[in-house]
Image (cartoon, rainbow over all chains, first blue to last red; front, side):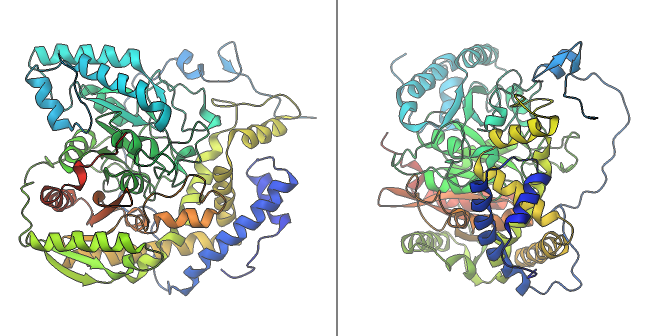
Length: 100
Length: 487
C-alpha cells in the first residue's frame, strides 16, 4: 500500500466525479491534504503479515439468508412517493437521463 | 401529585412509581417535557421534540397500567437517536440531506419499544450520518456536555448521551459503528452499551457502515441497560445479519459478586495518548473488581493497535456505497435549480452533505477503486480477521476485558474540528469491539476536573450477561453512576 504516499489533485478531482460531489478548487485542495494525512496514518497496516489470512466481511457467520417467498402488504404508492422531491401522475419525476 | 424531581431517575425507580400509582405516565412525561423546555436551550440534545404524540402515548400507557397489562418499559419516557426511523416523525440523521425526510415506517427497534409501551419524547442529535466523535458534525445544532457546557458530549450519539446525563429522558438508544454509543456515554458519565453485532436488528437504522453498525441502550445505570437491551434484542428477518438466537433476561444473575470472574487487562489500551488521570481512574476501578472477587490478569492484544486503521478503510468504504442512494430523486434534499441531470445530482450532494461525510465517501471510494482495492480494502479485511481471532483467543482465557473507554475526558467544543485525525483518535479504544463484532459497555468510574471518566468492558460474542455482571458489580460497589451534572 505504498504506491504513492500523497494523493494528487487530479485523483481528488476524479473521486469528486466518481462520487458525484461538486467541489470548489479550494475544497479539492483541502480534501487532498486531509486525505493524504489519513492515508499516511493507515500505512501502518503494511506492517501486518497477512499472508494466508482470509478476509472478514462480517463479524458474524451469517451467509445467504433465505426466507419463504410469501407475498404481503407493503407501503402504499402514496406513502412511497411522499418524500419524493418531484412527482407526477404517481411517478417520481426526473430529468431526462439520455440527452442527445 | 407534588412536584416530582426527575433528576437521575432510572427505569426501575420510574417503574415502581408508575406501578404504585404514585404518578401517571402522563404526569411523568409532562415532567420530562417541562425539563426539556427549561434546559434544552443549554444542552441542545434533541433534533425534534414530539410533545403531542408523547402525551398520547403516555395516556395509552396509563390505560395499560390501569388494566395491569404493563411491561418493564410501559409509560417510560425515552428518546431515540435521529438515525432510527420513526413513522410519521422526521428522521434527519442530523443531515441537510434528510432535513425534511419523514419515514413511512418504523425501525425494528422503534416498533419494539412502541409495542413495549415506551413513550417517545423526541429524536436525539448526532454527528451527520453518525460520522464523528463530538456531535459537532451535526448539520442541525451543536450539543453541549451537561457537565460543562463548553465541552463536547462526544459522538456520534452525543444527543442521546447528553439527554440521559441531563435527565431529559429516562433512557435513549444510540448506534455504535466505532464507539458512537460508548465514547459519548463515557464523556457524559452515563452507561452506554454496544451489543454483539447482529443481536439487535438494523432494519430502519439509516445505514452508515453496515458490517459495523449496531444499536444499543444509553441509560443511567447497568440494570436499565440490561432491561432496554432485553426489549430491543431478537431476530428480525428484515435484517439479513440478524442473529437467530434466544434472548436471555439480562437482569438475571446481577448480584454484585465477581468471585471467579477472570478479567483480562490488555496493555495496549493503556498506551498511546491516554490521559494520566483517565489511566489512574481506570486502574483504581480494576482494583475494585479484584476486591469483589475477580481475578485480574494483565494480557496483550497486539493487533488492537491496528484497529483504527482498519476502521478508517472499512467504514468509509461501506459508507461510500451506502450513501450513494442520496441522489435528490427518491427522497431527501434536492437541488434541481440548474444544469443537466448530472449537475443537479452533483449540486445536491455538494450542498446536502457536510465536510466529514464527503471526506468519508471520497476516502471509501478511493479505497475501493481498482488498483487500490487489494492494498486497502482487502488488506483491512484480512487484518480484521487477525483482530477478531485475537479476541476469540483472549476470551478462551478471560470472561471479560477491562480498559478505558476513551483516552481523555470531554474536550473543548471546537478544539479538534480542524484536525480529522485527532478527532479519530478518540475512538482508539472502542473501535476494536466493532471490528471484532463483540459486545462492550462503558460505565462511569471517576470524575476529573468536573468531567466523567469511562471504564469499558468487552466480552466474547453473545456474552452480554458477563458484561452486565461485571459492570453491575462495579456500580454496586461504587457511586460514580449516581453523580449527575449540576444542570
